[in-house]
Amino acid sequence: MSDTTQPADKQNLDDFLGAPATRPWWRRPTFIVGAVILVVLVLLLSRCFAGEAEGGYATQSVRRGDLQVTVSATGNLQPTNQVEVGSEQSGLITEVYVDNNDRVTQGQPLARLDPARLQDAVTQAQAGLSSAQAQVATAQASAALARANLARQEEVYRVSGGRVPSETELDSARAENRQAQAGVRSADAQVSQARAQLSSAQFNLSRATIFSPVTGVVLSRSIDPGQTVAASFNAPILFIIAEDLSEMKLEVRVDEADVGQVREGQRASFNVDAYPGRTFEARVSRVDVGANASGSTSSSSSSSSTAASGTGSVVAYTAVLLVDNPDLLLRPGMTATADIITSERQNVLLVPNAALRFNPNQDAQAGQQGGITSVLVPRGPRRGGRGGRAQREVGIGAGSRQTVYVLGEDGNPRPVQVVVGQSDGSRTEITGGELQEGMQVITARLAPGQVQEDKNGDGQRGQGRQREGQRGGGGEDGNAAATNATAPAPAAGTPPSSQPPRQPSPEAPPVGPQPSPDARPAPGAAGGGGERQRMRDMTPEQRKAYLESLTPEQRAAMNERRRQRREARPDGGEASPPDGE
Image (cartoon, rainbow, N blue to C red):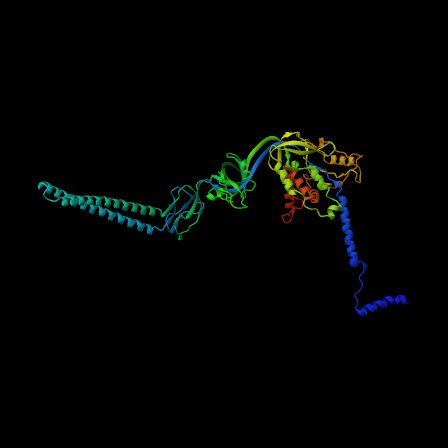
């Protein structure tokens, strides 16, 4: 009886003293902390054991094809001859005869200044000319009087036998005659000066009307009637006229790393945002010798622009491309992105650039970083991480010897020495070595369960290979599984029915995750859900290597599926996909 009433008495005592109620055992902090630690341990163990499987290899067939090496540059379209029309005179604009987009001919009036002040200057110059002409008449009369006086004195001197007039008087008469003749010439010069002033005033009056210097189209007009033009040292620009828009020029800025490949006469193509999907042809007509670091695409720059200026400036060189514009679709000022064809190769052996970057040793070392150690111990920066890749990119130059890897008969990578040629950024020409057409070069390592798309659009799953001495079987079975997963795809043009189906070996059980019966088709098939899920499971490096290994046809199919998904959405939009597309 006492044992039964003791808990009740304790509860009453706790209520009387106001003590907090006792929490249930499952809500105590000790239990919560223990559950969190248990979940973390489970995750660590799963991460540790998940790092023991290896994927297969992504391969791509070596093909022959055409290679086109291009240099990309951006710039703006300009007329071949653009004239800026200004005013030599100052005054009030009374009339404007043209507007933007008007076609004008040479000598056509464009605008007119108030001529009142200029007309007054002409009248004043005419009066000055009349005054100068009157001064000439006066000087001529004085000269005639001086000649007559000199002649009379000389006659008297002759008749008197030299007695009268005196020598002094005779010399004075001769001097007066010469002064009169000089006065006539001075008056004639003043007449010429007055005539010049009148001509200048008349010329200024004629400049009150602004005429078009060329035949073309008015691109811009910067004045309106009633505005005042003040012409001082620099003539104000009133109109900009393009002489001929059927032929234009594209001025692009070529980076200093690419300018050595650009030559006069090379073909080019460009596109503008106004006409998406349409390509226009051009031809390189000039590559400037001086560097243009100001960031402007105009070739008329100051003298200081011929040298690289300041820290952080991008050195570039201006290249001029001639463009035919018979339909007048292109307009001045449009921003264009041009691809200048610097080299063309026909029917050469091509490999993807990802095959030149692939190194199984580095990839294996990266794969061994898994397990519980990589989870508990944070991974520090790798030595030469980005720098090592940059050095390898620099080493892949035309004429250099490189190593690519192909799948051997045992399913392991086998190195092949090659000599590389030109590259377009995604494919590289092979000019020498042991690589043959049709061989499958390795471009990346696949994750366990990852599917690679082959030429015919069928998918093959890269099987995870068990390491030798690990749990789950010996090394031979793992190699057999990897060989089966990364077998070469059938040659292009061969019907799928002519390829014998691959049957798994009964002695070697499949290793790694297997596709379910209702799995969706691989990339290139109609469905895309499985592809998106597989790309979500990839690491960023694996996803990048997979996208680089795709052919242009496979990329086009991927973009088409993406467009169909976007159209299928009710709102007509699409969020950024998580599958790396």
